[in-house]
Image (cartoon, rainbow, N blue to C red; front, top):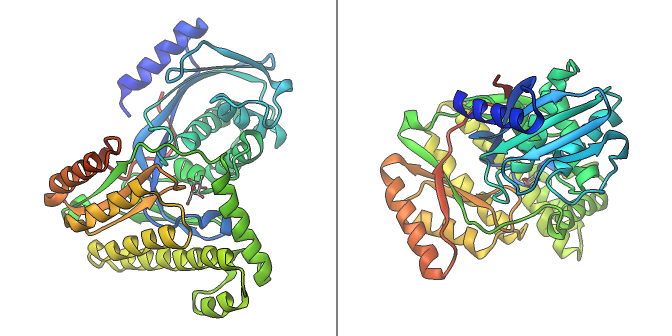
Length: 388
Ligand code: GAF
């Protein structure tokens, strides 16, 4: 994110609110390398931050008023009274920043108001955490302006609560933690049970590779039912198996656990995905840490896609087409990423194959009558920070 962007957001703030902002902050979207739908099962994930960010110019207020404006949404300034903020009272984009203010106050932090102007380059509805970026940038700004002293993972927990309770979307903790805690040049190995973290160096360019994000342009939303149904199914599986969370089923005990699920066919599929996905994250981490050729993670990504498609059943024809076309055009690995039901896929490829793979995917989409996909390279970028 450039100084020029911070300047533009700050000067728009001044036009809107008649004074300079107290500061400007940025928080990124993320792409998940491996570990999908494991975060609400206390499992492992491995996202990294995108260069695309939500940027917020923010000033404190002392009068119990929250004013919100976005460069990305038509309409003027929304003015809310902090005392009126109530869960699930808002179905607009403003629920994300307002939810963060609500969550901070609920947790006992004396936030007395703010003027906020937001502008984001994170594609929305693309499975790249545009909502988490909005939440985290507001949380970080208020953390600084009110000197709350909260750490990245604590901000992530508050943002997740905002999204679960205020917005009403039953998401896990991955996206907010990724936005708050990722570091440039690294993927984040996160244990979602205790939020312990390890930054894993991830520099594909040094090995002659690239990671592409292919946004299918099929929009998805987590407040709609399917995400919640998968989550409820996983919780049912844990209850039937007598564990706190599916994370507690060891990979070596998977067959025995599946046998114990009797005629719970649907739950069996969900359990198998989650337990095998955790194992895939651990395999990717140990391959990356062993210093082996990073190309060896490719087949694990492909296994992950098959599991999401066949067991978790959250892929769609567009995502499958990206993966199949990428693989037949020479990609090292590919899979859907994020919540599913649309959104984006990732493709691991030799640098020299990027153009041919991109062309093949674009042509395959045209032939299938799908919208033109948006393809870009994802470089592990910085997490949330103050930029001005
Ligand atoms: C979405 C959710 F917000 C995350 O918490 C996570 O569950 C992900 O889907 C699937 O891995 O991005």
